[in-house]
Length: 290
Length: 335
Image (cartoon, rainbow over all chains, first blue to last red; front, side, top):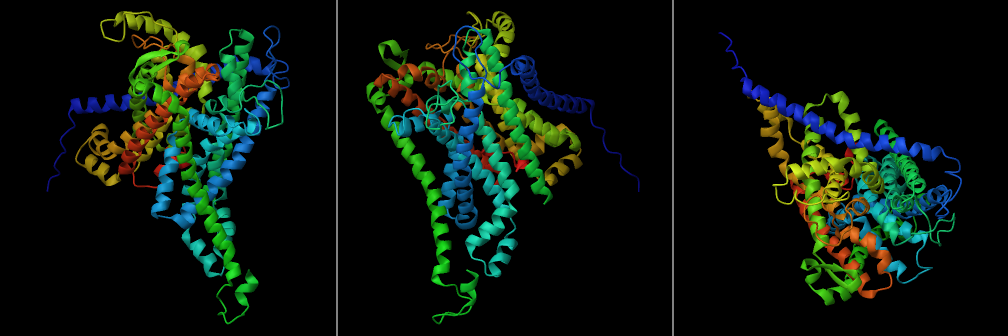
């Protein structure tokens, strides 16, 4: 019994293998180049703006000469609108996901809902802005352009993300848990509130936070719904400033002081989004440990 | 509730619930179902209202709105071929650049990268999706466009014999820059779906290929790619849907010229960009505004078609529920 030697891999094939493997590595590195550049320039150009005096404590004043002001009203506007958008989209989104996992399951109606929710994720954000403009702004319900209308537009964008990510998490709850609770005599609503939701809580938080991070950076839907005030306002019933809108307007300015503010606001926005992403990841890690 | 479950009254058995205690269950079920149904109604309602708002422009220009080449707001003529061409050209550039890189990244991360580096690298690639589009625009306007201008000029004059590339002035903002930014923006979503699809390739297939003496690359070419082709195609189509609908980054770097650019490095316009850029001016002119709504309608239908095809491919490629979450922009390892 002699061991047959395996035929050697021909040099040509070995070379192809090496070349292709390094090409794949190169593709990965290319994918990371823009990220590095964006972060570098945000820090390089944004830090000096962020550290300038009054950047976070004054509002943009719209003056063409002199100090253009900071971004306080933009940050506050973004936070207010995203808070309202979250308050709308997270409960509704989790409720729809509960319907899909607890009642609808594989029924035809549930699959139709799933399909249209997926379709919603593909709708461009500017089209959501147009929808809200048509339905809420033209009709002038509670004023023309208001912060809450911007929040509604953003919540429409966040909704499909919340629904789909929540559904995945809710499906992970073992059915033995549900069955145990039902067998102990708990009614279905109690099973959902006391067993299904708490078990999947951290996963739900992760999905919602990712939706928040996504909604926070959206500009297009705000252009026709909330756009255009400089002043600080806590009133969601008035026109509102927001970070993305502020950046968008500042980019188009010919003045260096204002474009510098755009970089500072960009850095602030990216920092906020990244912080939310990190919290989301921490929450999801916790859910996997549990 | 506990009380009613244990009391006997009116001849019911010990464990049967009273009708009253079943009420919350039914209310909850109906509320949740109604909420789900409301989403369908909402989408239909929006769609109908959007058609209603664009009806003025539709009746005025008919198909000429899509295929006529004359966008002239000052004369109230809205034939939007320049917009459509811009959308198609920039999305095509985005796919040509973005998809190969995204697939390469996915293959590298799943099949070649040492396991220890896989998650951190994947997180870094996913971070690209976290950057807001207005920040891409900011970066494009002040960094990418000016830095690439000399390169584009050199390229356009060196390769001027290729049609639609050279032989004209290279503008600071142009189709190519817009397409390049779109390529970067669709990269994370295409890569996330490709990763998801590639990781579902059964290891038996891969091991069989390796056992037959295939090299790593041959294994990828013969076992991994054929198996995941339709899923990856679907991912690319979803990326295309994103590219078509992207507004803010494009409006800042495409140049917003309402004629069709003569070549790749010329300025142009896109369907999404025109809405964002001209909405303020159109506010008081019914026909103008209606034309912009129709641009939105065309955009909506276009992305709808692309997404429906994409979902068909992806659902053929992966039969997991998780694919839905990936499409929603949430990578599964995050949930």
